[in-house]
Length: 186
Image (cartoon, rainbow, N blue to C red; front, top):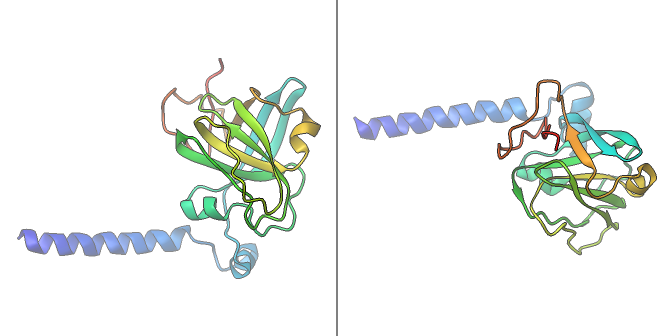
């Protein structure tokens, strides 16, 4: 009986995984169909807010959640509209290291600590293979256009949150929700 249940369980799991893969991939109609044909993937977007000494700064961020999305990042992108960027959330904090391989755009990278503060604002040069890191565990990295951090007064220790934070704040030590990061106020 055990020998039969394992193959049946494996078959059920593979059918479930095939169904999930199809549901999460890009749609083949309208704008998403064009994205699929160009090699781009449809990603979720979230509002990201940075509380600076000069006020709150807002961005619209594509969210790179999967390993493949995070590996691709903004590679091969020819432009990035002002006020837009890409967010790389991590389930658990880690010392992240980014490089600009195959990225023709200069970028500002905001390394975000688990408490929601900016650990570092680093500047990525196009096609540069030198790793950029805050040198400490972070919960996410946000990439925005080069010079936007300085223009908007974004600096180390500013507070960051993204997604819908009306539902309450996250609990310290809880895994990061890639679509809603709402750290408790200090």
